[in-house]
Amino acid sequence: MGRNRTLNDQYFSWLYNRIKNQKRSYIKLSKELHNKAFRWSIRNDDNRGEDGLNLRDLFIDEENLDESHLELRYFLKAECTIFEMLVALSERIDNLMYDLNNQEDYSSKWFLEMLKNLKLDKYNDNFSPGERFDEMTETRINEILEIFMDRTYDYYGRGGLFPIKKQPPTDQTGVEIWYQLMLYLDENYN
Image (cartoon, rainbow, N blue to C red; front, top):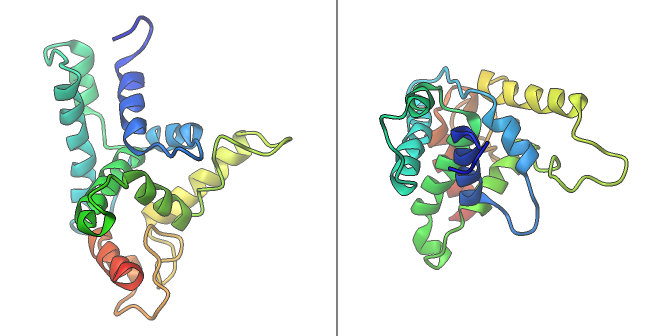
């Protein structure tokens, strides 16, 4: 680890590099997502959180970190963040769609698609002149994330990660993220 660089900073950079987009930077938004714990209320959505937490083990292995280090123990006990969950989910989608994607890594594509579905993609680091990533921006991002996590989006999933265009078989607010994803992929990529 470099001087004055915390384990969390190092981990954030490692995570961000897994999904970074070459056309647009989302570092500020990703930091906001990484500062907010992922929570769920639907059965089995805890699996998405576990996927995010599993990235920590991969990070520790890849970076050859000493697991007895005190900072590392606190790091491992922290809750899964929204950013971790989205990175892990992007990679899971990429693995699912691997054969359709010419065996290339499209994790950044899936991450950006989820940002678009949440209406967060406009909060990139390349704001137009006069715009800033300020408290109002952070407040709006937080409102969007609360709608997603509280499942106060609509029947079709608009306001969530995977909105459906056609009439879904059931109210998407009560469907676990993984099955929302399956329906979304079937509708958009089949």
